Image (tube, rainbow, N blue to C red; front, side, top):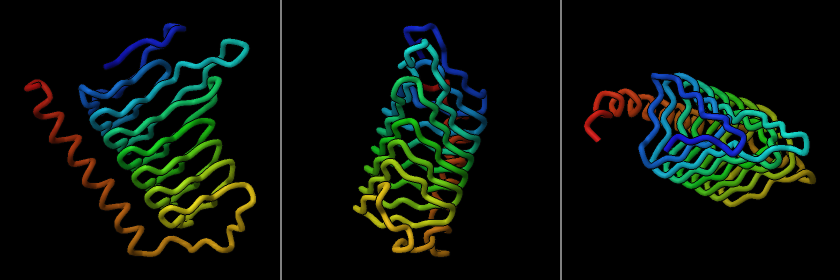
Length: 186
C-alpha cells in the first residue's frame, strides 16, 4: 500500500523497483532503481520535527528490504540506506540512521541512531545503537554495539561474509526482475 503521510507527502518509487502489494510505504520515502521491497515491510516517513520538517527515508539502488522489515524515523530525522544493501527479514532500522553501500543487516537486528559504513555485516539478532561503525566491520549475531563499545574488539568482515552479502543482494536483484514480469498477475 502506497499512501500519504498526514503532511501530504507521497512515496517516490522508481519504475524499475518492485514493492510487494502487502508492503506499506507512507510519506516522504524515496525508492531508487531496481530495489526489492518484500512482503509486509513497513517504511514510514510520517513524523515531523517541531518545525514541521521531515527528512526523507531513501532506499538506494539495487538494495533489498526483506519480509517484515520496519524502517521509521523519530521526529523527521533522516534514514538513508545505501546501494546494494540488504536489510534481512524482520530487522528494524529506526532513524536517525545511515547505512552505507554493500551492507548486510541480519534477521531481527535493530539499528537506531547510528551510522553503519560501507561493507559492514551485522549478523542476526544484533543491536547497533548510538554509534558509528566504520567500513568493513563485522558484528556477530546477538551482539550489542553502542557508544561505549571498543570497536577494536570487533573483527573485520571476512571474505566469506562479504561473498554471502553479495550473493543475497544479487539474489534479490533477480527477484526484482522476476516479480516485475508477473506483477500484473496479482
